[in-house]
Length: 432
Image (cartoon, rainbow, N blue to C red):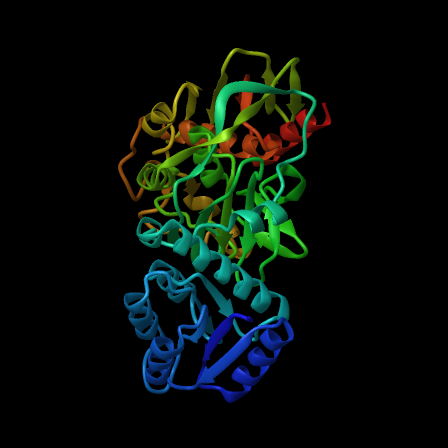
């Protein structure tokens, strides 16, 4: 017997189009333009999935979502909107929606959402009450194994003696994009062993691996791109994932990773809150077996060489009031990273703001999410460390080097370098 799907939208044309798509895939559908009638139909017919518009004439779609979830904690609801915002999408997912689709709906996204929602509902029913209580949809295991594969092998892989890890359950993070200035949100979902870390762009659904082969830009931040779709400013999140050993993860995001407070600390707090789950398969890491070096202009230099642990030594030099700073950090544990590196915020100079604005960058910079440096002093905040600037450079290196696809064992020595140099070094490592 085909699965029943309830369609709720105040536009009859959407109901006809979506009903036709799902009928072609073998689903049975029933439709209504009313939120109140949708609740009655849900109680009477018990559909397996609901496609629900945010804007309805008689009742707010989010209210209907809440009522359906109260009625049935395992309800699989796909929200839709033609003029929603990122914050609306994030709110819907926090309230328990399985997915969020932007209109006009594409055939592929509608079919994927229906299939995924069915699998999600079944996983909750199989898990019983504990599974139904999870705050948000877990990634479907069979679908994840089909769609996402581990990063390609490199010549230097070796077992670590540890297990692979993902997060314990799905979660949502939202805020501003540092360079776009737009509200942006992301959903993080567990993935099975040997999947790797993958981004999916919202609302287009383009998949972008967290891997150096997808790097498109390195000016002021690291940007990944596939098929013309970009994910910007990935380095802070990847830095925290590297430190916590999370190697299998699905990240659905609107264009740019939220900047939060300009550091990686909030990502660490998020990982602590949702928990890191050890998996069955052994973890592998890239073990550096010789010296790799990139030389930029002037005194710029970045090297990595064999060592028993992963460590970064960085020398930074800017005009006053920053001056010359140096720091060393060895990644012995997530706790050490969270205490010593994660709180260090990104920074910018007052003299560069006009140029950044002309380039369309830095629009999300606020007084509470980066360090603004004037001619004589820091203008907007108290420093968290006397050498916060160089610590943030180390944070960026830890994130950018995770684009090799695996944890790294080796000693990094950096002098006056940035994202472009980090990515050049990763490419050297990949080449073997």
